[in-house]
Image (cartoon, rainbow, N blue to C red; front, top):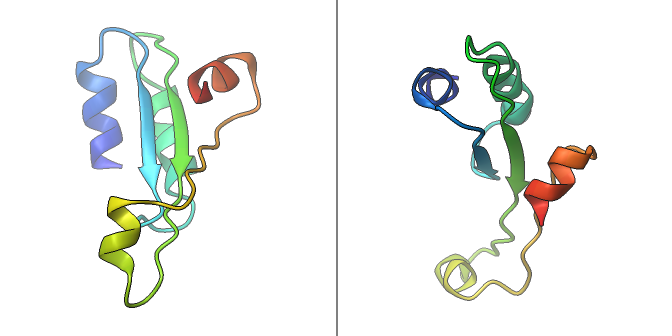
Amino acid sequence: ENCARTIAKVATEPKIVVEKSTVPVRTAESMGRVLAVNEKGIKHQILSNPEFLAEGTAVKDLSNPSRVLIGGQQTPEGLAAIQ
């Protein structure tokens, strides 16, 4: 939430914020609430980018992922951010 507060404070235009799977569950929802109430009325997008790491091959998996998934809100703005 502290990162989201900082983004809301300093951003002067819409930002795309990408959360990785190494953050706690519901982090995107929490960040979304914080970013939605910024004083400037800027609409930010939060995307999720899960990592698929296997025990014993995590470093290799990070360097050369077998797949990349990106998800976000299913709104016109969210779909544009995903693209």
